[in-house]
Image (cartoon, rainbow, N blue to C red; front, side):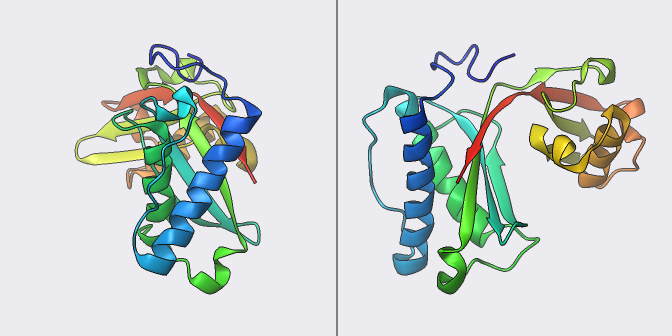
Length: 188
């Protein structure tokens, strides 16, 4: 399913809307680091004000520095990006908080997500689909670009998804719920 299908939002985003979202993300983190608050703003673009699900990934010197997102389109896309950018910089438990000193060197990547749809393992297309797994109380998500960046095939992608959810690598083969999504991915 293409990003935004069924959400009423026009996709893909324009180059200007992408740039504006990246600027919004950077201003949110800068504002948070300076004043512990997210700047108030309201973009002109209807697409950015429409509900949207997104992840914000931060990289410092090419290495992952934080990644947080929402799979549900419960807030305007620009607000989702603001909140996820700040959370990626300050709440990703895998990393210490981004400091004011390194903030200027951090690069932002935004993934705007389509709605989640149930999928079978055989339907997963590496490089196209992101995946979410649920099994018992475990849940894990990998963005579509993760499999491509790591050179994974479908089986490895599914196994790594399970590992991310703190499950055995073959947990996807029985009793797990799998959901796919696509993403419009862009960055600095």
